[in-house]
Length: 319
Image 1: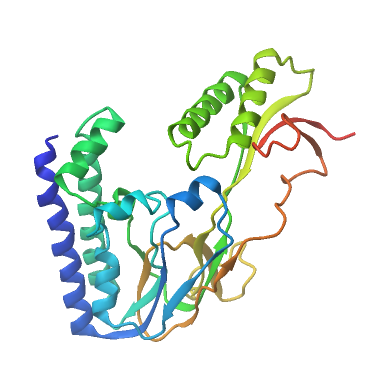
Image 2: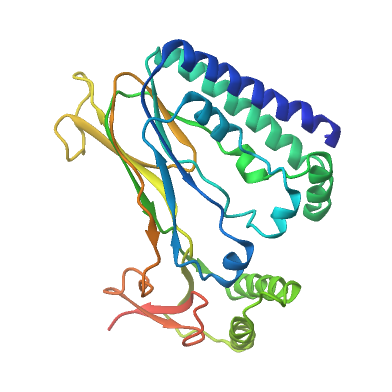
């Protein structure tokens, strides 16, 4: 797909967000809590040294503020992209409850998400080469933050009783083949050497040690390699408590008349109805110690490079 189609597709997203704004102005809001989490710097992202993240909260956010958050997909000062991370971007957790019809709200939000999906497909179609695609897309739309532009808006169709925002550290744990780990580590090493000014050279040494060991590693019967890593930066999530209709069985829910779920909350969550009790996100402070991999009671984890903090383990049944 031609890169020339991107501005029109981006404009379509903005137009549909405006239609959502018109509906909110017409119906009014019963709950409007909007939080802002600013981007992490590129330096902190690479060094993994963020000690805390501040959150600013508007408990009665105006509709214009909500629309501005939904439209925040690019930066005016392109030079700031060299300073701020483009992976760990600005986030806007929030709860927006509209005094209107949930089906109409669903139509408007689906239209926005469809436009975002079309934009994402068009970006991917510009070039199969990732670097060429980046240059062409950002040459056509300077300052675009791709991740921000394609984040979907979530709608909760059930009647909400309470929403509580919190931080969550995403944990990755999966079985790995030696060759797959070698490929991944080589990519990590290449990234480090691209930016020597901000690189953690001690980490590079540990990666080289891991590569050397993997090339010569022979696993014993019952042993396997696992990647077990906790992301250095938390993500906001929302704990949703919604009223269960009388004709819906309780199932396995621990609550007699409520359903409970946890969803990602990088963008405002929408719902329809009356005012909802909302507990805003608090500032995040980095833990002083990293948590150990889970399931240590049944499995024994040995770091591939002791003290290397690479998240690569040789795993065997605990004795």
